[in-house]
Length: 370
Image (cartoon, rainbow, N blue to C red; front, side, top):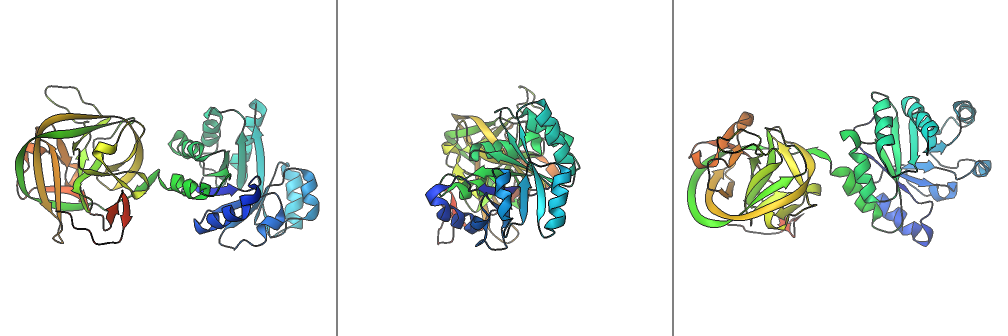
């Protein structure tokens, strides 16, 4: 199974908007365009995989045109004959899963075929989980048919491994853009920098936000928070023991409500904007990331503490947290640092984005934050 998630856009039902949908797909650099008519693939550049998925055997009579991959519901022997006749084409197996027999066939295809395009007739994702488990270590790629972007996100995350790719039905311009965003969101890495604390100050009362996620966060994992969009500090989850309360490994006591945090697709949000259903970026001390869903944000009035830090290149960072011993940030090597104990000279981990922000999107313009 592959690491990078494949995005195939199925234009077989695109209708009158097909040309515009394909143009957008090429601009967004989708991995494959799926058509039933070879003529729809002729003008596509070699930078995109041209996938032919006929709706019936009568479609084979006219040949495969410029297709790179042809996906068929035929057995190995029949496809072997076609592969001999068309050596320039890669052949894959289409399997519709509506019962136990279909599931067994999908598992066999996923273990043995270079391309397995699977279409599940029931909404449950348990059959897909079984196929992914059955194909663990197999060299081929599983491409799962989905109806929309939300289903694509679920498929990408199935069993934490996800399908190698999705084939999403295109209905309108904009679908390709949303699909690429969904594929890019699950994982990635950020560069973390050691910052040196230069000053702390007690600020008095203000509103702070606890971000309660729908996931267990690890002891070396939290979210990035900062007063400025170009500098953030890694706030740890409440996975470490406390003397007066149980751990809450789903929570990050994140900071004052004006603070930025990083969410999926490289955007930022203010902590005050997050709510149930939001998706934020969890980050560990090595910079590895994953997208987690927010279940709740608790905003309450608490005493606040301001922490100033500086990067080796002179850039400055500020973070305002709840002024309490149990609120913590992460330092080099995963060191857990209590916010009220921080002093000049201490080292914390942070991230220094290079772009300014406009409504959360990175933008190259002049912007002074102080």
